[in-house]
Image 1 (cartoon, one colour):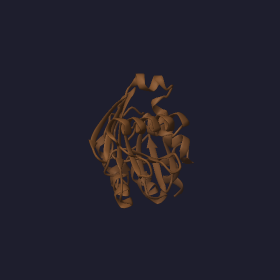
Image 2: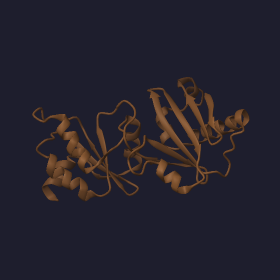
Image 3: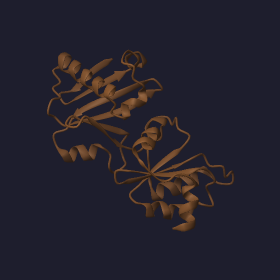
Image 4: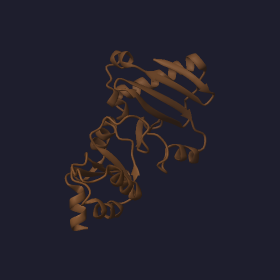
Length: 217
């Protein structure tokens, strides 16, 4: 575990495979707020206080977790004094990297998906929408362009569309992406985030979502 002080309100922590193995934690568990992940977080905060005097008690914290490789991760911990600043930094406009925020009060993680900043290790593309009507409108536009698996999940008040690689060889991928970007916001796609969505999200349409919406809505 490597901890670096960036400023009085921010530290950077790097965890490698050995750190995770010592605590018997899988990289994917960090997104779920498991008991082991919570204990690891407390250990990190204790060490940050011992090394740098970084006080994290009774202070709203934002955690930005960025995978560096399959078995290592960088975590940036930021003290946030203004709730509006927290909302802005969480990327609710869809303009910042993936964030996972640890709330000291209830010891749980919240999850936000936004613009990709790391290599894609998932077989799916993920897009975020404010409502189902937006996905329905998209479906009518791309039904003839996209042949493949698609499914929809709801998490908090957002809808997430996951689509597999396009089997329609006559479609220019750039055109498909352009239409997707017109209706939705690209989410950071990774196996970690896909698994989180499957576990914590509500399935809306589990199979052939594009075809279903284009046909019935």
